[in-house]
Image 1 (tube, one colour):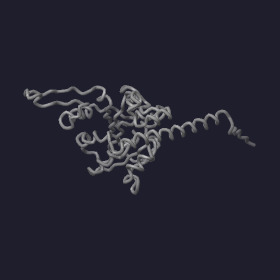
Image 2 (spheres, helix red, strand yellow):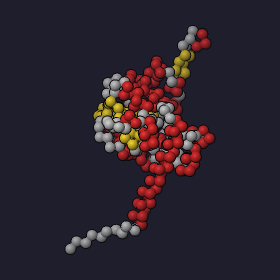
Image 3 (cartoon, one colour):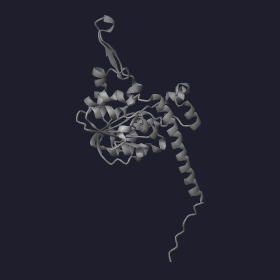
Image 4 (cartoon, one colour):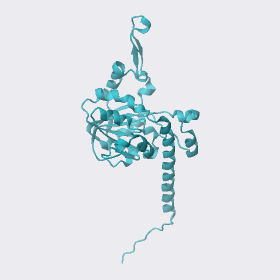
Length: 264
């Protein structure tokens, strides 16, 4: 007769697992409270929308786009208006219920939850993840990058924006709309703060390599059309002197831009 020794449910190992899951649920609840306070003050403000003018020039043949970290769905809304097929995922249920209702009903085009738990199995021409990854806990980064890569078609592209410094919400809590929630939770707005070299190394593990041609195109488009001062700009006929004044790109902001290609 075979005897199977079942580990007691009161064993130290199981107790540790229960404690970990309980801690995770507490963190998720606290994080939802922080995100709610943060987005409730921002309402329809859309930081990621500033990059939409770049996409048409950088990715002219793209038809399908996935927004990993859709926030209030502002980017999805703009891209869909341009006739593109758009889907996405947003961590906060409160944000989706308040700002993304048209994407959350038939047909459902936005999921709720962390990126690494996305159930989407499609492949997209372009995956966006702007101002999101720094907000994700370090222990979820590998699974998140793996999921992002799995959504990109072979030879497709990813466009990421990742801050490599602490958030102003930590440096200047008096300016934070989520100051109370942050203090009570012990969480940070930027939970994973790493240099560009670290991110590129991690991304390469999942077949996402830097596309230097697209990066140069991004800066050129900004210089010619978008004129965002963070990425370099020029003033024609500066002070009526018949000369052009050229401002170099701000390295700290340029280093946040990741133009990537799926190589495998």
